[in-house]
Length: 263
Image 1 (cartoon, rainbow, N blue to C red):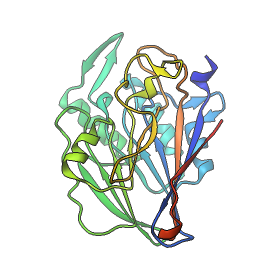
Image 2 (cartoon, rainbow, N blue to C red):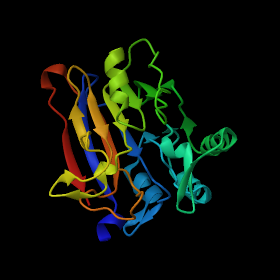
Image 3 (cartoon, helix red, strand yellow):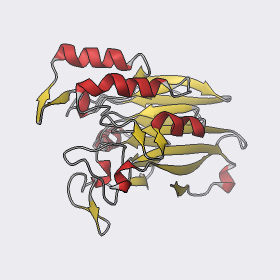
């Protein structure tokens, strides 16, 4: 049971061919499902200790709508001026008792309005920002339901190209559109949530967990997320916050990224 309630920070370093000595720190939160605190601290305290330049939340904030005010209150404690959100399937559905039901259009709109008080909501939309002299292009897909995603229409150069989506299914649209990216952040699978002998026994079997290089493109990351669904238990797939450092280096010194789990 401890594993379910003990938060890990997963560290990723990605070297990119922009000016050496410059870097951007991106922190990802995903699949909270109402979870805001763990035995080793709260989400906000964990994120604040990392001092991120950008925070990305990739959907599924709550399973019960009654938990939303508490989760948003926790997110308001995050000390970062650039927080982005893309919606997941649980921004379109909720649990009523033990049964799942679809939210009405007005309920979904009200939820996103509430979220917009703490984060910039990206629904098939993007934004260009400058961090430490580096130009970032951030695009958020809406793949909260099948067929809603629209292609990244940004043009022009950027030092960092960051794509956000809830489900890793988005990679199919990215491949079809030949959309270039340096880092694609997704969630949804919970890393399987229950893993035995290193194998996923339920959801997410089709997808990897963690980072994988997309051939001819950037790094494709699937987060284990933070909360749980169906069973209030995690096994072999601990809750995580991703801390990704995107670091400039000279092209001839470029090396593959490395990863470090901190408990």
